[in-house]
Figure 1 (cartoon, rainbow over the protein chains, first blue to last red):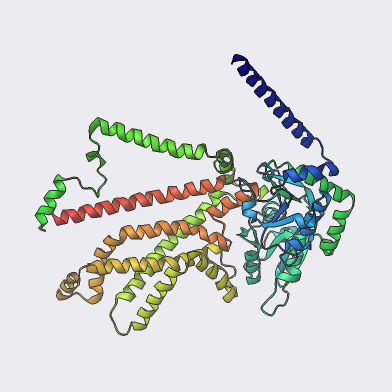
Figure 2 (tube, rainbow over the protein chains, first blue to last red):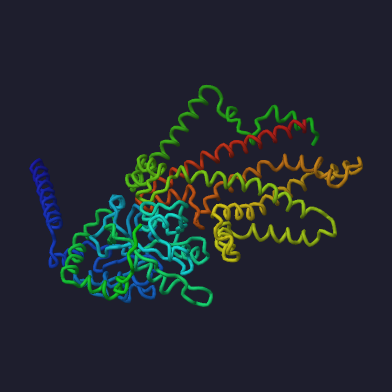
Length: 292
Length: 296
C-alpha cells in the first residue's frame, strides 16, 4: 500500500515536471523571433477561432480603407492589407472572417471576438498600456477639410489657424492635433462620429475638420455635397508628419502579434505594402503641406 | 371611519409605511442585528466586485486614481480636455433650463386647464405639444434641434451647442412638468375655487392666490424628481458637439483607453443629485406628516 502511494506520488511529480518543461518549451519557441515559415504553423493555434483569421473593423468602413463598406471584397487599403497579411501567414483568403467592432468597444477590457482590429487606429504609448499594437502598416499625416466658401481656404497662416472653430470625432488624433498643435481660441466641437462632424461642417457650425489625409481626401472628393449633390468641400492642405502611424489592435498580450509583425515586415521589405499604398492611397501624395 | 379612531390607531400600532425600524428590532439586540446585516451586505457587494473574474482589469480600467486625476485636470498636449472645465457647462445648462421649464410648464398647464372658448386652439396645441414632447426621446430632440435649427437658419450656425441643449431640455421637460402642474392644480378641491369666487375674487386672482399655492405644495416632490432627471440629461448635449463632463470623460477614455474618468463623472453627478433626492424625500415626509396632523 505504502509503495503504491510512493509510486503514485512519483508519477504525479514526473508528469508535472514533464508538463512544465513542455509548457516552458513551447513559450520559449514562441518568444524567440518567429520566422514566416514557423508562423504558418503557430498561427493556427493562436487564432481566436482555430483555422480562421478573424479580422474586425468598424461599421461603416470608409473609402479608401474599404470599398462599398464590404471588407471581404479585398478592395480598399485596409482590406487589402488584411488579406496580404493573411497571405504571408499562409491563411487562405476563404479562411479570413470579418466581424464588426465599434472603435469605442475595441479597447474595452475583457475577451474579444477577433484576432485583430484594423480600423485606422493610431498607436500611442498610453493606448498601448491597455491593448497591444502591431508595427505600423500606414504612416499618417493630418489635413484640413473645409467648405470651399470658408475663410480658412485662403487664410491659414499659423496665427490665422487659431481663430477658427474646429470640429472632430471624439478620440481621434485629429482632435489631439487641434488641441495640441493648432491651439485654437474657440473650444473645438467634439462629436461621437465623423458623420456628425460632417453635418456640422455642412451647416456651417464649424469651419474645418482636422483628419488624416486619405480620409480627408475622400470627404472632400466624394462625401460632402449640397442638396444638388454638388461637392462643396475642399482639402485645404496637410500638416507635416508628427510620427503618427496606424497599428493593428490586439487584446493586451495576444501572442499572435509576433507573427503578424513578421508578416507586416515581410510585406514592407518586399515592397508589397508600398504597392498597396500606391494603389489605394496614391492620389493623396499631391496634397500641399501647411504649417500649424 | 371617523377621524378620531384613525388618529388613535396610528399612535398605538407600528406604522408600517414609515421607516420606524426600531419597532421591529428593539434594544441592544436590534443594534447588533442591524450592524451585522449591514456589514454582511456590504461585504457581499464588495466581494462580488473585487473577486469577479475581470476584477483586476476593471479596477485598473475604471477605478485608477491616477487616471482620474489626469482626466480631472486635462492634458492639452494629448488632446485631453479637463473634466473640471466640463462641469460648468452641465451646471449652467440645468440651472437655466430649470427656470425656463418652470415658467413654460406652468404656462402650458394653465392653457390646458382654462375653459375659455377663445383659447380653444391654444388648448389643442398645448395638448398636442405635451403628447409629442413626452413621446419623443430627448436624444432625438437634441439631434433635431442641434443640427436641424442651424440647417434651417444659417445665422444660428455660430450658436454654441449648450444653448441648443438648453432649448432641447426646456422643450422636453416642459411637457412633463406641465402635466405635473396640471395634476397638482386639479387635485385642489373644487370647493376652494367656488369659495374664492363667491368671496369676489376674479378668475385669475383665484388661480394665483388660492389654487396655485396649494397645487405647487403638492407637486414639489414630483417636480424635484423631474429636475433630477433633467440634471442628468444635460450630458446629452455631447451628441451635438458640446463638451461637458461626460464628453470630457469620454475624450480621456478614447485617448488613453481608460474608463476611470467616466467613474469620476458619475461620482460628480451623485454629488449633485443625492442632495436633491434627500431633499425630495424630506419634503415628502414633511408633507405626509402635515396631512396626518390635519386629519387628527
